[in-house]
Structures are given as structure tokens and as C-alpha cells.
Length: 257
Ligand code: NAD
Image (tube, rainbow, N blue to C red; front, top):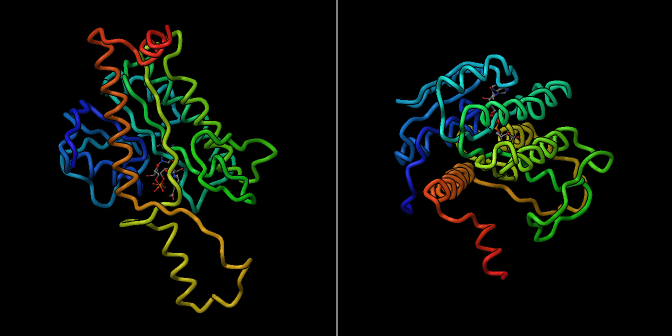
């Protein structure tokens, strides 16, 4: 494992969920931060020792602002999203879009330096067309071109997070978004268990398509590692700029002259 700078106080939204819990466990095991806080509406079955678990609804601005002002995290990892098995469109919009706006706003208003958003690979997928060697230059698929309501909310939230990077009002607030593809690993309840259950019940008699399609799956600890790297990159950039170093944009201008 490479040497990464200390991250300071990190707050993980959805830290009781599948991915959030893995991020918390990874950062804790690596002693990557001075303090780790989880913000979630539920408490996990196995809390990670030393982590401060805060129960709260992230869509509630009036509750979140005082909490953030009290806790003063240096960085936020925003993984929370409605439960996969029980989510209405209304709930998806409220948590993914409105909730992300609340998180960005309270982070900006409480002096958070870096904000990492867990988006989804589905934001560039229309569910029909093949994506071959797709990268971040692909356009977001939104509105009438996006049949998946969930993906549309993730794209809308991602756009907001990225547009909040270095705004005129908060020029030092740095943001990034990561787009994992379907995640598997310890604690998975969404991906492999339903497939295995269908297999063991013998529900495998119907095949849709030619069985030749490929799909990307991501092992959960790799996704957690990516979040750690992303946090470290944003905080290192911010730290360098706070010490008077040039912004990457300034370098580009100098090189271009
Ligand atoms: P999860 O359901 O296991 O965890 C989400 C957590 O968010 C839960 O603990 C839940 O209690 C919390 N939460 C929901 N609403 C909240 C609210 N209003 N306030 C506070 N906490 C709230 O989900 P996951 O599978 O770990 O997914 C994490 C993130 O990764 C999500 O943003 C999801 O969109 C994204 N993602 C997931 C996958 C996947 O395969 N699971 C793939 C790509 C992207």
C-alpha cells in the first residue's frame, strides 16, 4: 500500500451501507484520518471501533448545517443513496438530487475542503447501446434518453457536485465524482445473492439475448481504495494551494505562454 497523506477528519455519508462501510473500514485500518465520522439514517450491525456514528437524515438542511458546523469535517465522502430494494422515484429524487444539494451546501458553509461523490457508471449508459472502452469523456445520458430514473438522479447529482468545484463563492472547495460499476464483495445484498438464489431455485430456463454481452463488475474494496485515492488527491491539491502553491490551472496558463 502506497504512502498517502493524512486526510484529517473525514465524514462518510451512508457509512452504514455496503460501500460506505467498506470505505470506513479501509480508512480506519490504514489509519488514514485523524477522525472518522459516519452520517447515516441507520446504524450498522457491526460498527467500526473508533468511528463516530451520527444518526441523521442528510436531506434535512436545518439539521445538517449545525451538525457540520459542530463536527467541522475536512472532507466528505458522499455515498448515501436510498435502499436498492425499497425506493420510490420520489425517494430517489429526494435523497440523490435534493440530498446531494444539501450535502454540498452544508459542506461549503462549514469549511469542508474536499467533497467526493459516489456516482455510478450507469450515468453514461442508455441500457441499450454498447459501451466499448468508455471513459469520462463520454456524455452523460439524461432526460428522455435515460430510461432508468435512478441513473438520471445520479447524473443530476453528479453534475451539481462537479459544478460546485471551485465556484466564485467557494473558490477553495474541491469536488470529484467516481463512477463505480456494479459492486460485489463482502456484505453485498444486491448483486450476487439474488442471482445465486435464482440459480439454486432452478430459475434459469429462460435466456434473454445471445448470452454474449459483457459487463463490468467491481470488487468492493477496490472501490473503497479509489475513494481513498480521490480524497488524498483533492486534499493534497488543497493543501498545496493553501501553502501558496500554484493551482493546476495556473500551471497550464504558464506552460501555454
Ligand atoms: P447501500 O444501500 O448499501 O448504502 C446506502 C446507505 O445510505 C445506507 O446505509 C442508507 O441507510 C444510507 N442513506 C439512505 N438515505 C439516507 C438519508 N436520507 N440520510 C442518511 N443516510 C441515508 O448502497 P451501496 O450499494 O453501498 O451504494 C453506495 C453508493 O454507490 C450509492 O450512491 C450508489 O448509488 C452507488 N453505486 C452503487 C453500486 C452498486 O453496485 N451497489 C454501483 C454503482 C454506484
